[in-house]
Amino acid sequence: MALQKQWGEFVAMKYADQGKAFLNAFWDELPEDIPEKVWQWAAKFAELDLDKQEEGCDLDEFGAHRFLEAIKEASTVKAMREDIKEADIDFNKRLALIEFCLWKLKKKASVFCERPQGDADKIAKMQAALEAAQAALQEAIAKAKAARESESAAAAAATEAKKRADEAAAAEAKAKDAAEKAKRQEDEAKCAADEAAAAEAVAAESAAAALAKEEEAKKPADEARAAEDELRAALAELEAQETAYKNKTEDLKKRSEQGGVVTRNKAKAELEIHLAEDPLPLRTAKITQEAATRKAEKARKIADEYHAAAVEKRKAADEDHAAAAKAREAADYAASEATASREASEAAAAAASQARQEADDAKKEADEAHAAAAAARAAGAAARAEADSALDDAQAKVAIVEEQIVEAKKNAGPGKGLVWWIERELHEAKKYMPLKKGGILRK
Image (tube, rainbow, N blue to C red; front, side):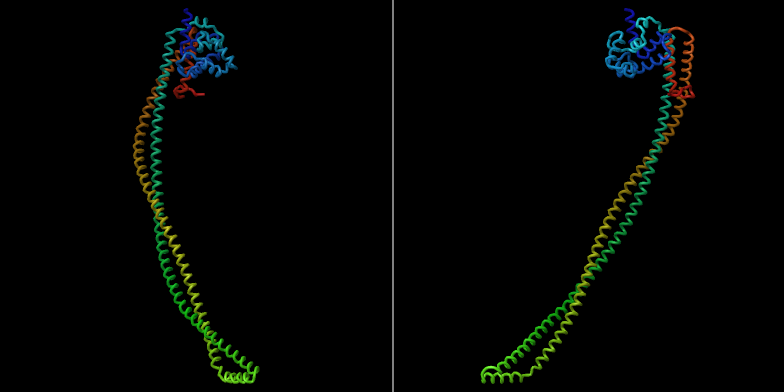
């Protein structure tokens, strides 16, 4: 019954304390590499105990499976279950570190419970000294870290604020340059639009003048064409009369040679009368009419050519006018675009000015932050001095623990496992101490 109670006390200990107890009980019987393995096993138990971690004392079946997998102890699930069942000394379906150590190293629980654990007072004194040294060291490290972080954050804030101010100033200058350039382009475009409008007005006036000339040239051409038509009609009438005269002459000659005597004589008489008439005025009129017609045709041709030239000039003037109107429209569009660009640039410049103002405010804040950073650096220096002092205190406490360890090693007896464990914890703590303060390199 007493053994069962004692066993219950051991398996209820934290993982590290179970490891210490096991090493105390079997120190002289264990190979040299076992203490380090027990240390690692205790750390792995605490890592897998998701609820209590370092404060825990045993793992459930799932946690035990994961532990055996981590140390590659069992190759199959079945073998793993058999190993856990075999190691679970008190059959509570949970695995304590001490149970695993006894099973792994083939030690008996009864023998373990009978072995002395060493001088309780001496052990407590050494443990307290170690914990004091660890606490002092952690406090010093935390102070030094806080001081470094404070200085770094303040310096970073000042640098960022200055960067923002510089960027905003550069953006403002760029926006102002763009606004000025856009204003110049707008002025040039408006000037071009005015010139294009003036050119369009001149072209319109030229087109109107050309149209007037075309109408003016069209009138004499029309008159010449009308006169030519009248002359041609008169000439046609003369030609018709001349043809009728010839036809009548031929008819009378023919009748004077055919038919009865009376008929022939009558035809001869009529022929004599007909031939007695003078045809010269008719021929003269015809010649005069033909000459007048040719002259009218020549005049009409000249008038048509003049009119055609006027039409061409009017067409050219219309084309010039259309081109001028198109150029004016393009110039108006360019002026509109330039105005929009100038307005956008002015808006960008205004935004840049606002950004610069904000950057100035930010720089002011940064200057204040810089001053605060300087104060923080001073405070950090003081904190570092305080941390150095704390490190010195921790170093002194570590030295005390080391002296106690040396003394404990000289006195053979129970508790050697605990001495080793304390020395191992001290070794771990030294990894976080500065080298100049007795620290060691981390591996």
